[in-house]
Length: 555
Image (tube, rainbow, N blue to C red; front, side, top):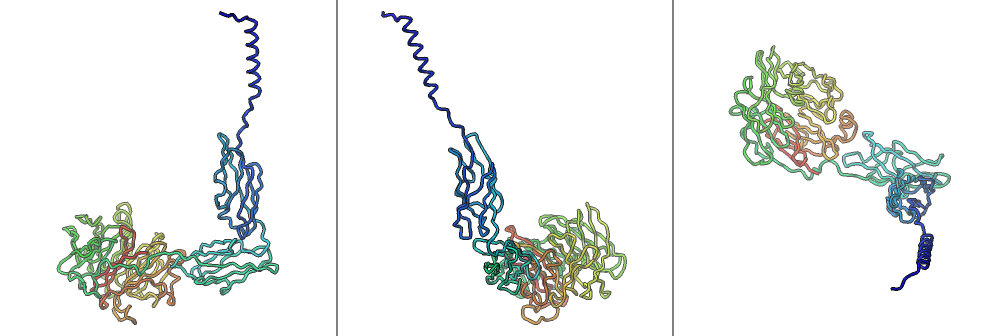
């Protein structure tokens, strides 16, 4: 075996070590990763959207100043970042820069967030920098938007609002610029496109003003009859076809009829099976007493309230409650002994809230012939009742409330009530009896009953039933009918109703249905609006001796 000399071995080891050291010195060091925006530009600036504008980068802030006419809502970016980095939102994506936006750059474990602001430069010609429109009739503000690039102003109006818009506020630049319109001064009828021309230093800029009309409310042409048991159709059921049936109520599914014909009955029709015969609610031995055992019926949030009628001292006025259609036994929620003559309660009751837990029961006093115009009011709180408070109703337009006085709640305005009766139109009243509004005749005539305010699909409506004991002037308003009036415009119920007048009430009427063969001499009528499980509104209207009808509305 050949032996290697120690000196040769040592020499080879030193050469290998030197080679390894030399190789390590030649290996390049990796560059550190960076997360930076190198350049930032907008590529579609200017009125025509064809100008490129570079941004100024200062630390983590970027400012881009674009021509004034630039549409800031969809600006396209061109972003260069450091090698290997990514940016979100990505380069080339259209972005709304009406407010500053953040851009996040990442590269491995490195990250930076840039704040990008796009500003408009001062205009070089006359421009509208801001504008606000309001309704010509109600003063309600209409949403509007200016597209500076296309010189277009879009005003959004729903189909239930006034198409006439008034310039409420306008700002034009530069200082010294003036404007004119193609309308009647600042009033623009936007049923056709209008223009606003801005003049400055011999130049003109013309803006087109267009209406964006959006759908709202229901479409009357899509009305469906769910159940017709009316005088016009000749289908009034024999069980409710005389003056002994004076109260009907409706909750969106069930129609309840309090009838004294051939006994005492609380009939129920189900809109899920409208052609089926009516069933009856159990009166049991809880329902007792009164001149009439049962008189009026109301339904609130699916709970049924039934009253008797009393008209002599020492008789006991009663109101009963079922918690729903399937409740087998009514609860006596109110019992009041008549203390004197000239008090007649039970012809018409109104229920607000959920007595006896919380709420109110109103009973109009109609003690013929003393012409009382008042409510007896009971207040309920945590199951305790107080009252009655005798609340005088003192119209200023009408002579008095008259028979069948009722109140109803107003969506969004819990401190106010609608009030009506046989000898007045409709009024808005506080709980203390103070009148805030009262309609006039012939805009809304007397013998209009049971007013309701309800919302659907962005529209607000006032509906009621009319039972005239004299003949109307046209075929549609002879006898018994019900109306639905558009009251969408305005802020608050008082302003909304004040927008109605004798000249525009016909225009504001979106639906009328005449369902009575002839008006009834006893002039009783009720009306209620509920909603199906699909959210569509349903209206029930009843006229004494003329039965009832139920419609469903849709958009």
